[in-house]
Length: 327
Ligand code: AHR
Image (cartoon, rainbow, N blue to C red; front, top):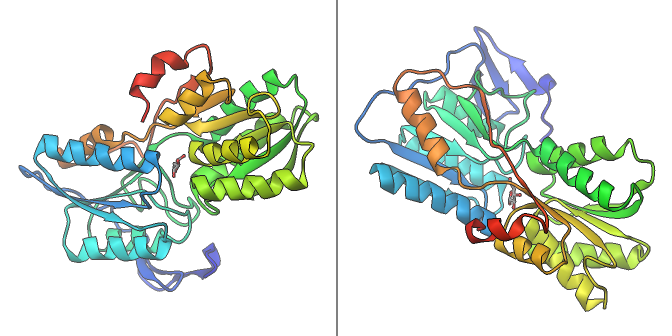
């Protein structure tokens, strides 16, 4: 399926067909939420194969329990198609509101539009959808999450300074078509374009997964033994790459200087052990902010379309203090 403005067909009084999947009430108002004692909240997770996702889910469960609200939780197991089906099932179950972490930017558009058509408010948490196809504040209530471009930018800044502006980089990208993979690449490239000595010599997706990251890094490093640094879009792929480096008899932190993103316990420990130079935080604990936004909507308040988390930068100077709260 190709998604573009072209296949969003205007079909009459403000309705549009999105990529053949669903109907968009293009000019319809955003769904609202009635004030109640308790809510049935849907949370559509992308997958549960890493500590970041587990921490995000736990945070949602904890906040629902704290408020005495019902949580309808689904796990798309790494499939955008299943995640669309999960949202459809939540619509059929008539949840009051849906929290969605869209696995990829385009394939989840039908889920967003169908929730709007069904009159169910939706908040996107962590990842976003393609803003040329669906917009926060128009097609869904709000986006709450990190500034992934800034994360890539901050990783590039610390790495560039440490390398004296000169590196042959391997890049491990996140899930193809996801907003963090797209934006973390953009942010990194934006920063290094002023440093011609910072050269990406190989770049491929490791799908944000440890073992895939290990396999992809192994292949890229065998083809490019001249690499001096690694930029990895998340800590799980970084841990896989470190295992591959060590298996090849290399010393992470010396033979290759590493920049990574997330803030897992493993990455924080790897900084302490001298294996990782820098880890830019991406906080997965969305429960409090997401449920507070739902409560605000129920009070009739308009949400800011974009609520951005503040991410910290961890290096050997400050990581010990962070380690106890790492996930
Ligand atoms: O969308 C956030 C990213 O998704 C995190 O960096 C990663 O670990 C997760 O799978």
